[in-house]
Image (cartoon, rainbow, N blue to C red):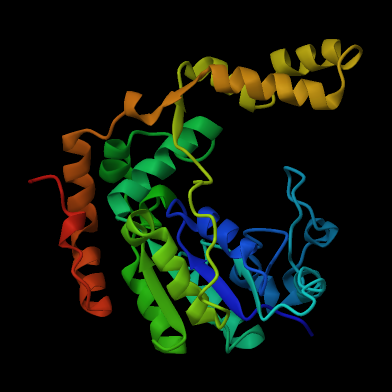
Length: 307
């Protein structure tokens, strides 16, 4: 059975896509062709009887490949060849640690485990901008989410790192778990990658091209136009029917992408307010203080509202 020997388990909106792409460049590293398999966070990973008929089809509602069985998961690494390090990145594993940890212990108990943690206030802000852009999830303002849904908002809850990080460290030990900070990636991406290569056991002298960031945060200029372009609706369906007769699928998708780009603007147009930052820092304060004790690393720079 060919399974990964390293996993990136956290967190979303903290540079994991960039790091994953840097890892792909290394000749001794093989990465899953499906990023964010989410396999280890599925209860059905150890309990196949829980799989529904829809699960067994292996596709999400959006048509993406869905990895729900160990056979499908293993198949992702069949082409690894002579690679030394085989890995995948599912940054929700930290959030879903109650499921992910026992599944990892079952299938890849000796895997090296990596997380990149970002200031949770900035992570929540980035996640919120994505929800606006993609027209998904909780699109209440961050202040409203803190005040009305702080115990249920995934945008907020994914920034509570302490419990999940402690769970991973308790289960696997510090020699098997490596925690980086997003700030380290921003300041010295080449240095972070050298440390990461050494941790997963490949030649750390290799220099990846780390100049390109994989994602940039943007927000829509007009939310109504953005919703029409990104969601299924009668107007979009009607336009597609008309265009289908004269324009290929590739050209239709290209046109849609151009329209989305024309309706996009820099995130600076929707900045995080001082009041929102203060609310979020208060929300995360105790978790950050516990985390810095756990990691034995000063995280006081994550508190910026009163500077």
